Image (cartoon, rainbow over all chains, first blue to last red; front, side, top):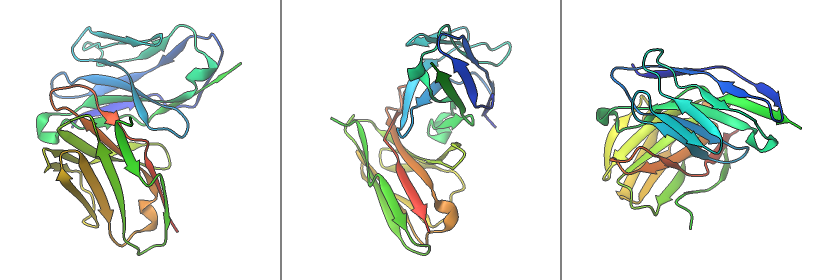
Length: 114
Length: 112
């Protein structure tokens, strides 16, 4: 079935460091891919998305490119801030028969220190 | 205005009790979901409803019964609560033609 694998955390970085969180997927076809972010004590917010191969999603300095050759959707940011500390989830959108539900990776916790 | 709201935010109860969590969305969406987030932060779909009809039930025990009285509401009733039901439950909604799901703030359920 469709699934997502993302790197395990926690990831600890200093402010202004470069961030990469790896995400790979297994799917039939080319599902839409997403990164969601969960700040402490809050619900999930959509960070960025890509709906087809070679699409690049971007938001708030974060980027991810949908690569069908490597079945990957890695999240990157050039210079992280303390306020980026959160849990990041990679997800794919399932088919109509599955109600278009999301399959999530296990989440990667990011801590950015001053 | 809150887009997707859930009540209560916290729920502490004893094993064996029955409890409900309510969810409402004011976005005019036609599809609603319940997800469960366990203690390790893993998120898993439980149910999906489209226009008040159940689309998927992801091997959730029969003790969990979702009910959708209208397109804007999807409530979750849980019978005979067990310790393993302790988790954060998230409601979400989307328009089936859209790629974005909007999540509620979550309900933290603790079963003692």
